[in-house]
Length: 452
Image (cartoon, rainbow, N blue to C red; front, top):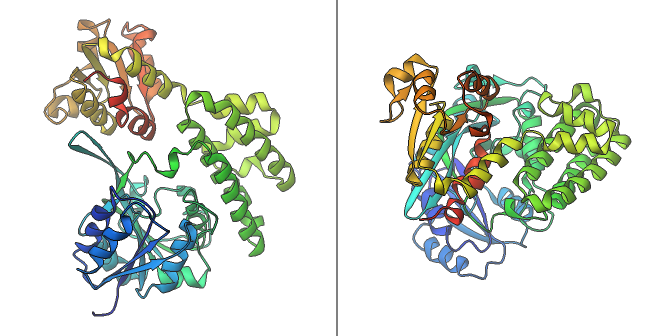
């Protein structure tokens, strides 16, 4: 084989339902100069047998063995890799054929440290696959060009938006000693890897196109663990230790605290209601002690979580109120779908953009009539993938007692005020402003509470 351009690391343990699709998607990459490093963590469900059988058909596959720890498995793969760039494909995901060819061409040309692309959240209901794209960077002016971070916190401010949806220059990882934590299990070992790679990267590229297909309906995925908060705490303690050891703590401690708060807020949002309060109290106690010891500066915490940081300083009650704020809309929508959707014939979706399209597919699956309205005259003319888009005044006048669902992340408050001014009662207004929550907790699980 010619020089290896990309080493693709797949760490796996007991993913028999998904592993063949994952490996085959890597084998079928249009970039042929790759190696496929599959590191098994002790599979006992037939996964290893599938891997060995596929390995006999492709000489680029190398099978390695390690203890059951994503960190140990990934680090072994990185140590054994021969490629100039490192790709990562998790064993229950898959990638589209041109991912590595297109990414490597750009990364090699500009000698990038990191290149990221968009990705799809993917799940199946029955025999149908649903794919919804997410961007690698929401600042459009920064896409499709070399971005020089110049030793600031720019890349870290993007948050964790997928660490497997791109390539990493191997020598960049080695020179900066970037690894995954070798803690037990398969949950959140990527936190340190993501933080450190984004902290050290100097030449970055954000692609608009999406390639990576991230599965969100695997019931055994680590994000579904009710014990995840202890794992979160452990991984952030490991990261703190690393930053202190390398004398980076003083410069990056407030960014570290921002990531920690974002992670805790996300985790609480994913928990069932009966587990929220106990976990929130654990988080409060843990963060309160840490804040007092490390003297975080709330004014330098990322704006998206600054209020939570300030509430942590003030009192437990204020912290609880603040960290749970912002989830009310999603919970109300979940309650509606569980308890009332079955008896609803028609819904009105206010907003015909990306979120509106997600709601369109969801309610069509539920066999409900969907009416769309939007303030955009362009959308009113063009429609939404075959559906007419009305002016708000037209629909609210004709259907004053239907359920109205606002599909917007940025303008939900203004849109609600508009509906109220048009005579729609507040009890008939719901808001869909959290795409990830809606997909994971409503769309994916729809079959559990929608009569078929």
